[in-house]
Length: 263
Image (tube, rainbow, N blue to C red; front, side, top):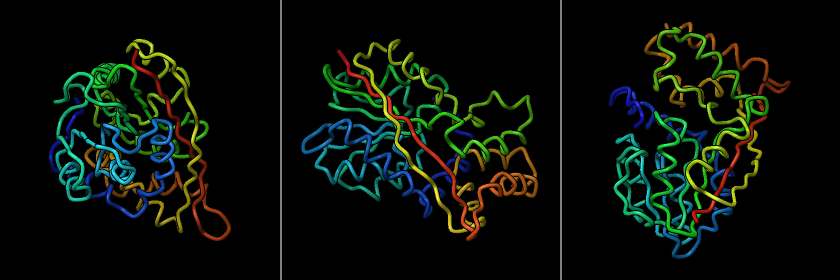
């Protein structure tokens, strides 16, 4: 189960993810769909689908696509975006699909939001057919992703007594190489392999970069425990080192895809 943080909180997140910078993740979505060989007639699940952007690409490839997300407002937006897909509002640890229903299952930057990632992965495996594949995508290791800077800045404002709450989850919690592989083994997946996808992020200005940081779940979460001026100052300071001569903000970023086969 993902800690909801309240309907108003996830409403803000859903609206933010419709922002102009969401398409920076398109290379990751396409690379994952390529690895899973999602195509005509593939029965496909996008777990933690958000507003359905990746699901939409799967539909355009001819997949029989389904999406699931714990945030109801995101599902509402996804249904508007992709009428051809079927979307469900549910927790990743308990989904309303029959065992072995899907040919392929993917979860992109979503499983780390769950309270028990291994339980969530086992549920994804349950819904996948024998011989099918499950792919999990997480942020690359901290040292290869400059997103670590604003994340660290925001988390520094969260009181120690609150940091264990799912609302303040560290998005890099599963990023170290070997963590997902160990989970895949525990979940019974075989032929596990991984690849990195370079996904550099470029913003037109420092103001645009700060605006984008307001589009991630950690920002409205931090708003609940820190003064607005302190939060904005911390985010701005964390991004300033990446401003280049022409005023743009440029940082290195990659994602890691881990995929395994269900025996």
